[in-house]
Length: 153
Image 1 (cartoon, rainbow, N blue to C red):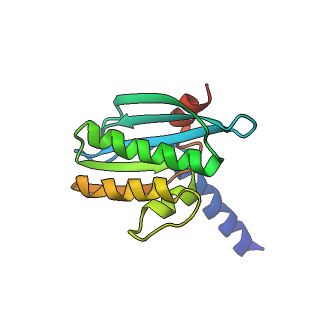
Image 2 (image 1 turned 180 degrees about the horizontal axis):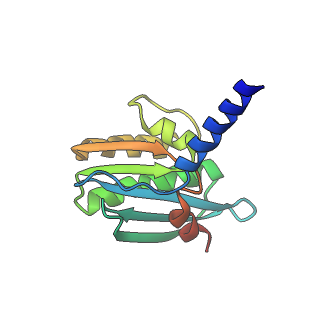
Image 3 (image 1 turned 90 degrees about the vertical axis):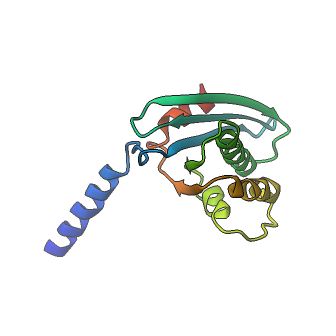
């Protein structure tokens, strides 16, 4: 019983550590993305926010899209737009964060993705070579709060 108590405390402690946004290292820009999907109308709203090591908001964006086929496609499109925004802004070291585990996992390797969201993943992977440093992280929705708010408000 005592062992379970210790395990419970470790789990609770770890979860508390993961619930707030963490600043990137200096000279790195962190771009958080999220989407909201309306399956009845096949529409999506995408939100993103870019911040520096001090937590200063450098850029926000909310975009509306029609003819989006799924929530997965909406998240993959949001990720692609986050990477594209980093490139357009001339940021060469970026961390891309989102709460869609599927999207984040598919963006990491350089292998052909034949899924429904494959076109967005391929576009994202092709843009990776434009950066000196780029990484993709999965975060909890609570960590991705500002991007989520932009997508859902």
